Length: 338
Image (cartoon, rainbow, N blue to C red; front, side, top):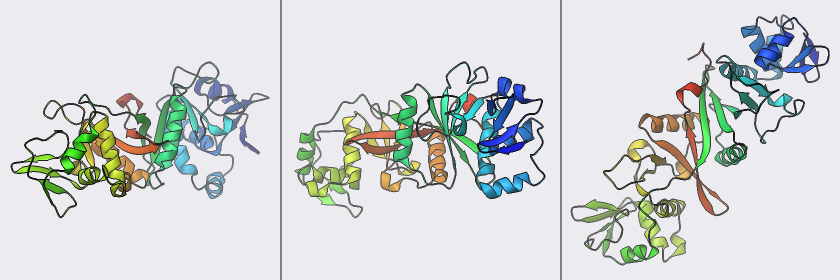
């Protein structure tokens, strides 16, 4: 195997099999195969291909400190039988892809020469920054092509976990709400609470059951709800949380505090008592900053049968990004490090 400006050139007996059967590397003239360094590691570990040299792995890691992480991502995708083309080969193979995509995935019965990929892939280390705006834009580009946006996350022991990201429009059946209801509530007699909320005694003629929490002596408004009420007539009282809460109500949802789930709100799409809340909505200021935190939040939500959502304001309109575990048959992980 020799170094080439675009990778490592392999011309062994396994060339045809590596490409035709597994879509590994990129075929070039002379029945040779061009491999990326991460593909060289995979071929050594799983296809019995020799290292280019005795010190190759150490030198390759010095050249690219992220190489071992990338190699376990390839392993996680390929061992179950998926075909994968990495970004270095997109142009040469004339493949269509979204900006920022690292890899294109075909199922075990597909191949780059004869069909379209089912997903586009990115990967991150668990400690990397979570950029939800970038992730949202990428997922929109991928889904517009009819493909699945997949993210693989690598932890410190080189274990891999798979997630799917997508825009979600959470909606309920309880209709919108009237701004006049806020004005009515603002005019009721109330007492401030030390948590930024307020207690309203005069609640016999309450206009909107989804606002506030019933109390034997009246209604309790939390801080976000209180600010939403105040901002109705005074824009100086505007807060991000109040704006998101208003959007959730307009979507026909019933937001309730999500403290016990580690989020700002849990949102019901049907009247209370008819079903569990399907959505957990984070306040952006309280969102995780890295993939380690995002994975934890998503797993906690999944464990209680809910979907974790991160609000983003796109062109003045609130949208919601979900980070979810895929179906059991699409959870790619490296078999030796579970």
